Each structure stands twice: as C-alpha cells, then as structure tokens.
Image 1 (cartoon, rainbow, N blue to C red):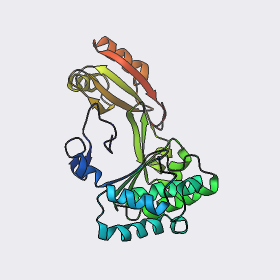
Image 2: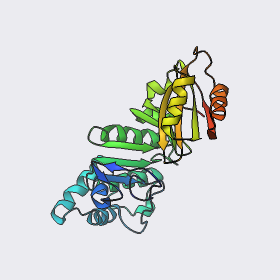
Image 3: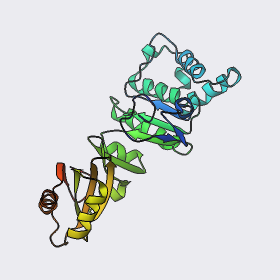
Image 4: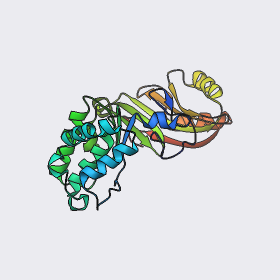
Length: 258
C-alpha cells in the first residue's frame, strides 16, 4: 500500500508529505522497493539490468553510469556486474534486487522479506549490508522472522490481521509490561465508548486503532492490580450498554501476541 502496489481500503499514506493516492509518482520517487521474490531477467547481465531499471526510474543519462557504480559498490556486486543474472546464486540475486532499489538513491527503502530463502551466511551478509545502508536511508523491513527484527531493526510495529497491536523499540516490546489489555471492535462511536469507559472503568486507558462512522476498533489497557478490570468485565459492560461487540481479543502482558 505504501509503495502504491495495492490500494488502501481506508486511511491515508503520506510519503515525505506526498499522498500515495493523489501524488503517486512523487511518492514513488522517494521510495526504493524490493518485493519478496523479485522478478529479475535471467537473460540480462547485472549491469544491463540495472542500467535498464535506472532509465525506468528517471535517472538521467549522464548520471546513470555513476548511479550504477554506486549501487554496485554499496551492494558488493561489482565482481558480478558482467555476469548473467540467471547464473547468480540466490544471495547475489538478492543483492542485485537491492541494487535495483538503490539505483535512484531514494531516501526510503521498503524491503519485503529480504533474507527469504538465504542460507545463514548469506543472511548475515544481507543484515550487515542493511545496517550499513541505514546510515543514509530510512529502511522499512517487512518480515515474519523475529530474529530478523532483533538483528536489523531499531523499532518494530506488530500487526495482527491488518490491525496495529503493538509498536516501540525492540527492547520495549521484549520488556514485560505491568498491564493487561483487550482489543475490541465495537458497533459504537468513540464518544459513546469513551463515556462508558470513564464511568465504569476510570483507571482504564483507551486507545483508538481505527474508527468509521458506525464503529470503532480500540485497545483498552489496565494495570494488573486494577480492581474490577478484566476482559470478561469489559465485554459484559459493552453488552449491558447495548453495544454490539463484533470481536474482542485479549492481549497478553507484552501487548504483542494475540
């Protein structure tokens, strides 16, 4: 959605103040995207492929050779620049895909499963490369491997079925919390839900995850020791107030696992 490859069903995405849906070309100019399983051309040499991609991304003719040299050097693919892509190992193909994302020197890199299918040595090499690139680029890394997050990321966002359930530094997400919580999708406006929480559960925190004209998805948190606060009590209060509880899921103490 951020890269414009898929449309959003709600909300807005701004890339460097440019709305992805209203100004897609300006937004994409600031992004280098490496999808999982990049469809490279096996019959092209690495140099030919990257020059072709640079032209598609609007890198000027005079700047193209210099951009190619920088991308090859930063991804450590200079030694295979004249190889056919079809002859490269999986690790080198990943590096070529990363060089493609870098060729126009965008400030933001979006990488989807960049180490998928690599052996342990290749994974270490790619992670080292990402740490080097993070000095000059903001890198958004999508992965289902927690070891990848711990090895590569400064901050993490945890999603569950498209919903944000936790965010923070890796240390913050790993650290046990003194709170419990529940995420609720309720057929009620936020104002009515906030009034109910203030009346029945004054020590409870309410965080709005998403809201439409007819319903709200919220996270309710409370201290372990808070009297009368529990997942069952929250659901019971919603029902008694006449709200339709479409889906409630209890959060564990770290707020990261459902």
